[in-house]
Image 1 (tube, rainbow, N blue to C red):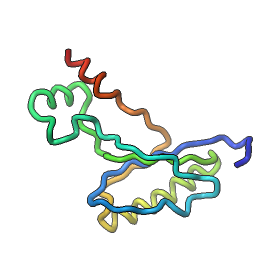
Image 2 (image 1 turned 90 degrees about the horizontal axis):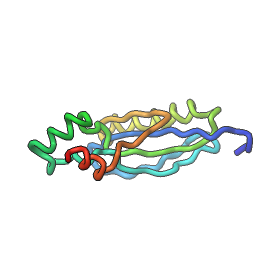
Image 3 (image 1 turned 60 degrees about the vertical axis):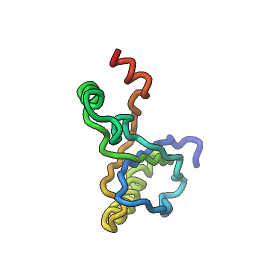
Length: 122
């Protein structure tokens, strides 16, 4: 990558219908997969029910729509091309029933951790 090119990031958020492995290929030159993670809040599980669940929803809003996150990095000048290619791949995964829903965006600020949330209940 050119040392003068500004690095940019694209985040892909999605929820699976069924487990499946795939490869992120055909990205523009100098774009690369940087990592993945889980973005569901701690209270987005069947274990969190009743008053505690409701209190967390009241404080922080409804549980996250997307369960997973993937991050990609590359040059700013080809960001839109990378987003287009990622969108085509995710739409194909959705059409085949693997991905339930997805969203692509340029930034992501994770929600606070469990300890912080529980401290708000005190």
